[in-house]
Image (spheres, rainbow, N blue to C red):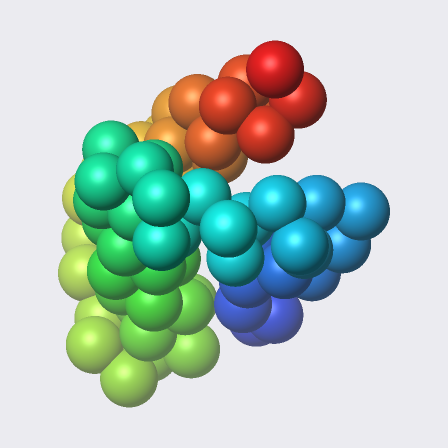
Length: 78
């Protein structure tokens, strides 16, 4: 279990400029990034027991975060 938040800028530092541009120019990308941020924060709060959840719920949140990250990466690398 990691207690480090997985911020997009840290996950994809090579795409920092592109992320900033896409957040402004692409509403779909902006929604994905915002959803990722919300899910990521929920995972971090669960991992640090700020807002504890059951193991299954935490695993589902991690899977959702991973799926969002994959989709974001596809857009960034296109």
